[in-house]
Image (cartoon, rainbow, N blue to C red; front, side, top):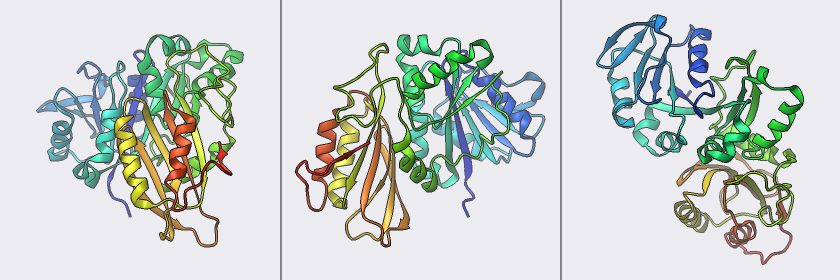
Length: 346
């Protein structure tokens, strides 16, 4: 049983409704004892009626939760929370609206000390329906926030026409086709437990990776094209971020794959936002579930292959990706390299 504290990271551009959403979570889940880290210009946005006292820059809330501002380094803030006298069962992190949250996400994937106490549950991005299409072009950080999200809340849906909502889902979905989308009014989503998404779990990564073949959006390039970058069908949006998927039959050489992936992520850390996948390694009986955020990555063993045909399926979310070169590199990592034959593309 995993007794680590689950973590939900809340992101979104200025005015998208992040603090409203955070306050709503606190009120809707009185059974949980939250610790909240806020990073919006160092200001506490928690409902003032919930604050009953302070202790060394940690604000105690009326329901036994605590909140603090990220005005020190992230690791220092985490340490202060763990060493505080307040017990908590779930950590909420509200990131600044003017930057992408990758550094905070990476901390939960790359720090062994943090991983001993916390498990990343999901990254939730709020998008203001009334202006998200415009700011996607004006502010490149918005696309990064969407690309890193597991869940996207299309907030303020009551401010737009229903016909536009369908178009907006396609536009936003073209950035991150693996995210789960919900619509919301006043940052409220009915009948969905957003605090137990388990988006970074082995089971969810495997499920979302396998379902990628069924996702196909009108905006942006068609997923099954040979080159998703060279044959774009929609050029309206700048700073394009897309999803590329590959199915590679057979098994990788573990040493070659690990060496290549480590270097690929490092040298492309400005262009790669997330990678998810199921990987088959030669002489390994079990599937390996792979995920990466920027240049931080991790493997987790899954179920055994048994009598299934071996394959690897990887989905890359990023920009300036050379589809053909990436595919050729993956094929060269096989135990028996294949020179451009029987390639399958998602």
